[in-house]
Image 1: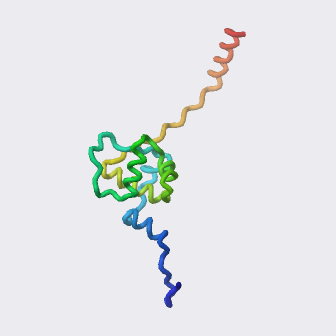
Image 2 (image 1 turned 30 degrees about the vertical axis):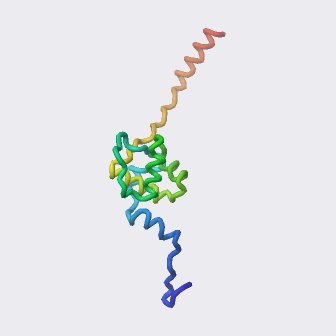
Length: 125
């Protein structure tokens, strides 16, 4: 239903992410990219009672070990931006730790591979 000034009330599904994130903005992409690995902080003595149900859900999920930000979003079915904002909040509170993904392995040198192959042929025919 549109008002006389053209204003339409927002659908609840559009307002809810704003409410869940408490209006916070997205964290820096380099700190929480899709492939950043996240886990619960070791020795987190007691979870505060003031965590939202969504933050509690993320903390429970991250307690099992390292997951990427993309995996967490997939498991929770929350929008990626919401997940990143909530994770950043939990990190600021000291409840989560992150680590960069494992660096891509360097490609083996072709000459070394040929030497290994020649050595195997010489030994095993």
